[in-house]
Amino acid sequence: MRKYSEKILAVITWGAAAITLGTLAYLILFILIRGVPNLKPSLFALEYNSENVSLLPPLISTALITLYSLLIAVPLGVGSAIYLVEYAKRGSRAVKLIRVTAETLSGIPSIVYGLFGWLFFVSALHWGYSVLAGTFTLSIMILPLIIRASEEALKAVPDTYREASFGIGAGRLRTVFRVVMPPAMPGILAGVILAIGRIVGETAALIYTAGTVAQIPPDAMSSARTLSVHMYALSNEGLYMSQAQATAVVLLVLVAGINALSGFIAKRIGGKAQA
Image (cartoon, rainbow, N blue to C red):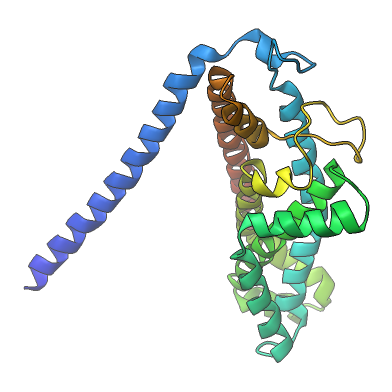
């Protein structure tokens, strides 16, 4: 019976893996087959108009909003995780409350963040539909994800590392940044990668905060649209479906490139930490 149960579990595991890989391959092939033939030089024009339907302004806006959001969320998220793991008393009520709050915020739908951003940043602070309003909304949205990923990465570092550092006279701050952070960096980068993926693929929160203007934003108070919003707007109009499919290819390549680059950086950092 034990052998039969092991074989059944093995078949279920391999079947689930095959279904997952098959679904992923189907989605990638579908996007590439439908979108690659529609890639044209006019789609990468510097200015958007109804004739070229350029995706370059949304691509630049995506890069800017992603960069600004990470500049706000990553220091706050990693710093909060360092405090929870290295400085706060383990098992205290404050730590439990912060963790429960972060887990709760990570499960809130993006449309709720969009409505909050519209009510607070766009309306109450009078920022209007702008890159700044979208940036702060996305920063709040990805902050719990970065906190939890960074916290788990720091907790995975053995306490013997810290004890050895304290034993040779190093202070807590030096121990955190010289001893604990390097081996934890791959896990922290994994959380940042997930945050980037959520930013790049976000639509609802940005429609309510950053707007849908297809232009390269001249400043942070100007409206802009990201690639995902651009694709949604084109498909919603129903007039530029081929351009929307081409945008999906660019979005897929962008996410794959970011994941590959982040994975390479994480391996390099992890290798140096082990050395």
